Figure 1 (spheres, rainbow, N blue to C red):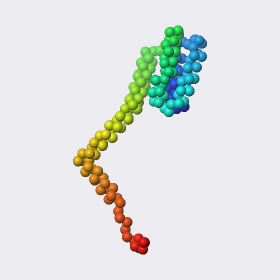
Figure 2: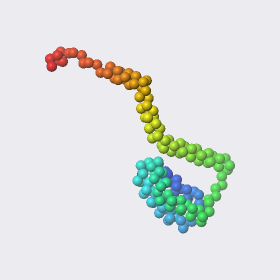
Figure 3: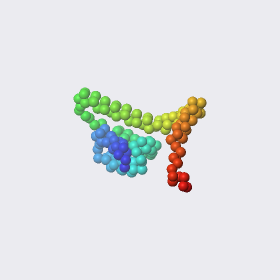
Figure 4: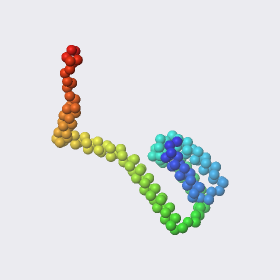
Length: 157
């Protein structure tokens, strides 16, 4: 399994344990669901592929429903932290979310940017300046191919 896929699944799995005071009633249900999610993750090539496929998968709905079910029956965990720790955690979460958002935006927009650049280059080649550039490129290309020098071996043939 791709390490990014595993990390994405592990984060979802840890969300249950880190958010709620779980009772034994839900442990089997959680583990059964995550066995299916890990199996699903094995079919994905990378984290982006997993996230895209998981969002439209019935497993996503099952995950959300289980989260809601557990949230209605189990209390949230209480953590005692200082104000500085809370600010540091919030800053870390924000920075990770911003980084993830940038990665996803780049991945989603890359094909469109590539296609726009190709269209722009194609239009530029059709302008008079583009024709001059093409002719210049061809000239320099042909200039690299020099005629072979006449040698005694060439003459004999």
